[in-house]
Length: 254
Length: 316
Ligand SMILES: Cc1cc2nc3c(=O)[nH]c(=O)nc-3n(C[C@H](O)[C@H](O)[C@H](O)COP(=O)(O)OP(=O)(O)OC[C@H]3O[C@@H](n4cnc5c(N)ncnc54)[C@H](O)[C@@H]3O)c2cc1C
Ligand SMILES: Cc1cc2nc3c(=O)[nH]c(=O)nc-3n(C[C@H](O)[C@H](O)[C@H](O)COP(=O)(O)OP(=O)(O)OC[C@H]3O[C@@H](n4cnc5c(N)ncnc54)[C@H](O)[C@@H]3O)c2cc1C
Image (cartoon, rainbow over all chains, first blue to last red; front, side, top):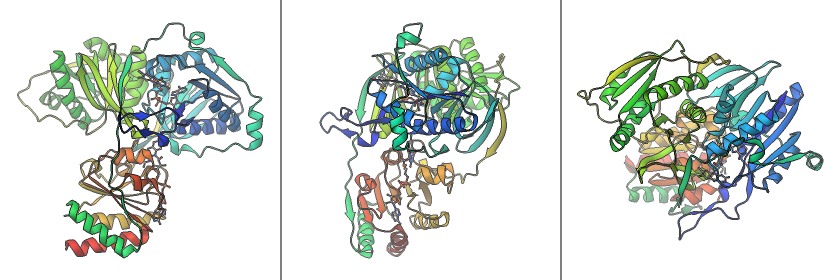
C-alpha cells in the first residue's frame, strides 16, 4: 500500500500576539509546527501500513525550515519525505496544483491523506482540490478509516449525520482531529529518522505550467481581545456573590 | 450571472440574500440551483432568484464528485461567474473540488463578501481567530462559501418573478459507494440565536454532570447549553449543535459562561464576540481567564450549584 501524507508547516497559532499599534498579528518569530491534524493523518497512515505494509511518503510545500517538520514525520513512521520549495506567490489554487503535480510525479499511490483543514488558514480546500485535480474520489471529515486490500471504508462526520462510504483506490481522504491520538516518537526513532531520505523538489520540477494565484490577500487585520479580566479567587461563596453583583450591574441577568 | 447552491433549503435562502445584492451591483441575474426534486423553486424565486435551474438526476445521495459534475454543467450552461455555496461540510468540499475543475479561485467560510474596486472581495477568519484576512479575486469564475447565519434570508416577495428550468446533466459516476447514513441525534438547539449560553468543557468528569450547566442555564432563562469540541466530537456527550468554536458554531450572546473550558484559541474563535464572558476554572493559569470579563477560580462542582442558587435567590 502506498500512502502519501500531505503535511503543512504552520505557525503555532496559540503564540500569535496582535500588535497594539498596527492592530495586525505579529507573525515574525512565532514558533513553527506541523499543523495539528496532519499528525492525525500521519498516525492513520502508520496504522494502515502496520496492517498492510507498504510505504509512506510525507509531502510538504514550504520554506527550507520545514525540513525539520518532515523529520518529525519521519520519526513518527514515514519512510521518506519530499519538500517542495514554496514559491513566492501562493494561493489555494497554486498550492493544490503543486501538490497534485507532485503526487502525479510520485506516481504510485493508493491513499492520499490530508487534514480536514490547517490550523492557521483553515480553508479546508486543499484535500478536495487535490482529489478534483487527480479526478479521484474524495472522503472528507473522516473520523474512522478501515483499509482493506482493495478498498477502504471510512466514516465521515458531518455533525448531524455520520456517513459511511466505501471507495476503491486511489482515494483522497481528509481526517478529523478525533480520528486517533498521534504517537510520540521514541528517541531511537528520532535518531533513526536522520537516515531516512528527504528529497528537495521545486515547483518547476513538478508542475508543467506556470501557476499564477487566483486570489490576492489584500489585508490581514488583527482582532484584539480586550476583556475586563476581573478574577475572583478566594472564598467560593464570596466569589459567587461578587460575580452575581457584577452581572447584575452589567445588566445581563434577567 | 450569479449562482447560489446549497444542499440545505434554509442556507440557500441566506445565500439568495447576498446573491441578490451582488447580482444587482454587478448588473447580472441570479440563479439558484436545485439538484434533484423541485421542492422549493417558488420559494427561491420569492426570495430573490431570477431563475431556478433544477438539475434532474436519479442520484439521491450527496457525493462531492457527482455533485461537482452537475454544478460544473449548470455553471457552464448558465455562464455563471460568481458562485455562492453554503459553508456546511458538503458545501465546502464541493466548492473546493469545483474550484479545482474550473482552475478557479475559491474563498471558504466568508464572514463578509462585497465588491471593492469592482473586484469580489471576501473576509475570513485566519490564525484560529487571531486575525481576519481580506482576500480578493483576480479571475473568474470566483467561488465563495458562506457559513450559516452570516446573512439572513430576505423577506419573501411573492410578486418577484422568475423562471424555472429543468436540465438533465451527464454525470461521471463516482466509484465510491455510500454504505450507511446514520442521523445523529441533535437536540435542535440554536446557539447562534441564544442570548445567554452556559458552556461546558472537559473539566466535567461525567456526562450526567452536564446537568449542572443546564440547571444554571435554566435559572438564567437562557436555557442554552454550549460546549467545547471534545465534549461533542470526542466524548459525544452533547450533539454537534452545542459545539462552539472555530470548527463549530460562532456565537455572540449577551452573556457567555464557560465552565471547565481551558480557553484554547480555537474555542475562543467561536465566542469572542460575546457581550460579557465569564469563566469558571480550577486552574488560575487557565487561558480562558485572559478572554474573560469575570472569572472564578474554583472547582466547577462547587461553584456551579452555588452560582445557580445565588442567581435564583437574587432574581427570584
Ligand atoms: C494571496 C495569498 C498569499 C499567500 N501566501 C502564503 C505564504 O506566503 N506562505 C504560506 O505558507 N501560505 C500562504 N498563503 C496561504 C496558502 O495559499 C495556503 O497555505 C495554502 O493554500 C493552504 O491553505 P490552507 O492552509 O487553508 O489549507 P487547508 O486546505 O486548510 O489544509 C488542509 C490540508 O491540506 C494539506 N496542506 C495544506 N497546505 C499544505 C502544504 N503547504 N504542504 C503540504 N500539505 C498541505 C494538509 O494535509 C492540510 O491539513 C497565501 C494565501 C493567499 C490567498
Ligand atoms: C483545527 C482545530 C479546530 C478546533 N476547533 C475547535 C472548536 O471549534 N471548538 C473547541 O472548543 N475546540 C476546538 N479545537 C480544540 C481546542 O484546541 C481545545 O483542544 C479544546 O477547546 C479543549 O477543550 P476543553 O477546554 O473542554 O478541554 P481541556 O483543554 O482539557 O480543558 C479542560 C479545563 O477544565 C479545567 N478543569 C478541570 N477540572 C475542573 C474542575 N473540577 N473545575 C473547574 N475546572 C476544571 C482544567 O483546568 C482545564 O482548563 C480545535 C482544535 C484544532 C486543532
